[in-house]
Length: 540
Image (cartoon, rainbow, N blue to C red; front, side, top):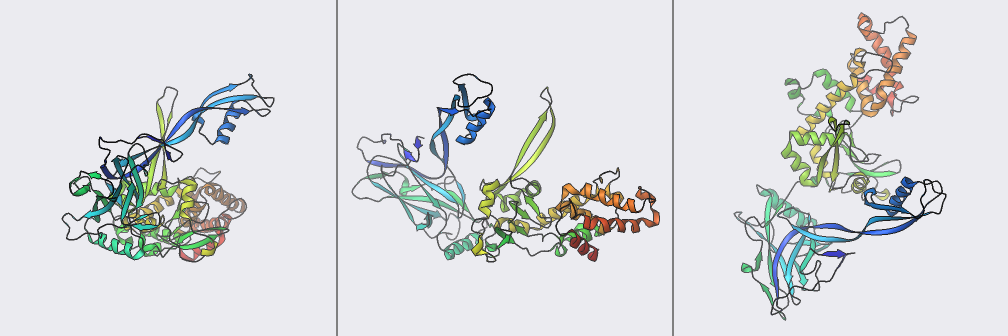
């Protein structure tokens, strides 16, 4: 494909036949691909006093908003190790000058998705009109009313028109227009979804019907019945994916300090999870563990609760797992586990609804290049957005004048639906148990025994879990300090809990009376630690 510089076609002579009669050679659905085109460029940067080569290059990269690897050459007017100031340095780098546009044919899309309609036409005169139709194939009736309604921008249309030569987007002969695969009104969208929902595969197959829209000029269309891509394997399969539209009116605008964002409070407390008996019966969990999780989770969230109003991108579930500001965190790890165990459901709930989680592998090698360790990280993306861009997307439309009102939040709706799936809820509960055990396996600062050696009660285990979920980096020091205070008051008590005998529960209670409030005192920053301790004590 030819290049487009700053959004405008670079002129090439249109393809013409001998008679100079325009002809349509192809019409298809596509996605647009933008490929940056670079040229080597020289620029002079003036050194600041004290700067060396590394700092000058770093400043150039920052000021020009380029990548470090785009630097090609560094040429000072006079050589220096450290600049005295005002020295001139010529830097050669790769500068983006335009985008090369191309289109890749697609045969699959989702309702409400944006796609490109692309036509290739030879000649310089005439006007092409294109309608989209559904081929019902073996179905009793069509999902769409032909011709299919779609959006160009915010305007509903049933046809696309290209004026030959004038509307070229990529020379010499390519025309394209972006559309959204949905009608405009909510009523029409709902009616369309209802029809999709009745089909077993929840899909429809679309093709094009082309016509000459200007009788003053001849436009040759050679396809049978003037239909394009109306053959098996060529039609566009449009699928309806239930991405949680039913929750559109359930997400509320809330506030945390000065930050406004979405919250779905949830409907299912951990205590009401319907499959507790099954988990206990198959030894996935004990009755004590169930009691601990239920009591502690009331300090956190419901199994299907979701919010995005604090420092994290997204927080979800009974354990309030998060996607952190960089796009990583414990929630993407949980998504990845769900993907491994339930790949079809992962596609249904996440991938089909523009969410995905990517695995990143980092290998550590020795001097001989042999891999000695491998670390994995997992990053969540929505429509390929992550980090700050994703946070901004999720919070779009959540502002002061919407406080405490319901606001549609398309990125969150699929996650709400995911959180209501019983298999995903089981993953949440099993993660909770893993977290409980890993928190009890920590060693208090200054002690060789694990925390589990000092606590045996459900209350003690719940307190440690509560601390670990909210301030994981403080558990070792905080529990160690609680032990220090206890043994200072009771110098004759053995520091080996197995020797406490019948006094074990008494000593444990004293340690917990110190530890519970201490989690939010001094350098320990757990919010409402004393209240959370008292709440747990009243339940356990």
